[in-house]
Image (tube, rainbow, N blue to C red; front, top):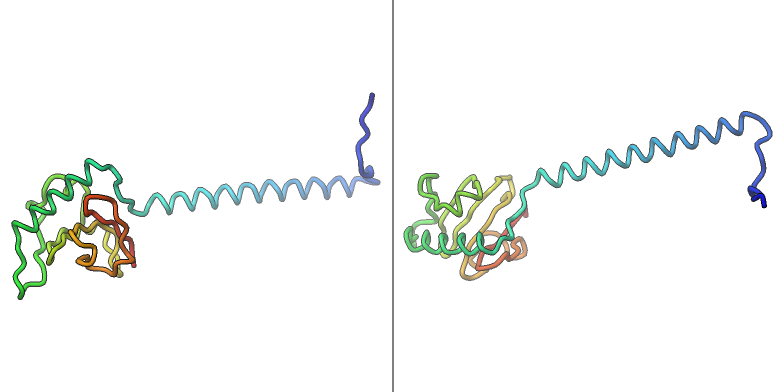
Length: 149
């Protein structure tokens, strides 16, 4: 039994060429879409992302608590910028740009940007974090993450 193809057959070679041109356009669109997806993935992977490893977060929290106890901020001081050689191991593994002890919190900037950049914060109370509360997402153990805000 033969199957019959629905539609009409092309009358001349011009219609066949038009069909081939449309098929070529579809190939270009698929190629362009592939490039756009690769570009989006490249941009996404270039941006910093937080760790969700609970063991790391617990270590970051413990080290942050020690930093707050070791570098108490007096009422006249705003913060203490820690030099790299004073960074505890778990915090140093984050490869931060800066580590700053503030009143009730530790600010760990992993990638600076004009509006705060990306980084971690440790605070016993989320209200003690330096940026507005909506900029932070809690990761666990009092460790928070922020992007530009």
